[in-house]
Image (cartoon, rainbow, N blue to C red; front, side):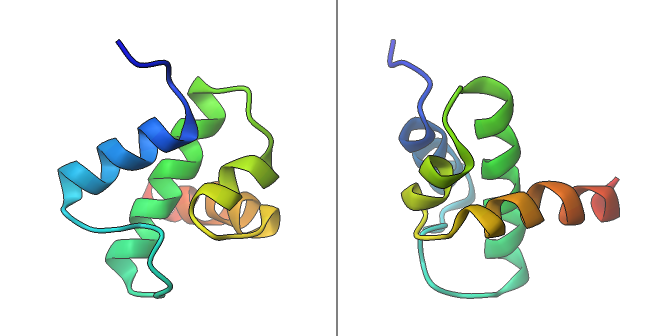
Length: 75
């Protein structure tokens, strides 16, 4: 079994949703998928915001925004 890392979570999300969340696009399906990725990484890994963001070519601020501002809307 592979250790849970941001790369592992990214690959699982990419496979399940059949998209590439590293792609530079602001389409809703991609941004929501990235937000799911951010939350899962924060919950199941000890990586920093910067390390989580680098895996999908985003800054730490994008990760924080995805966690704090997207999920309350979805809930």
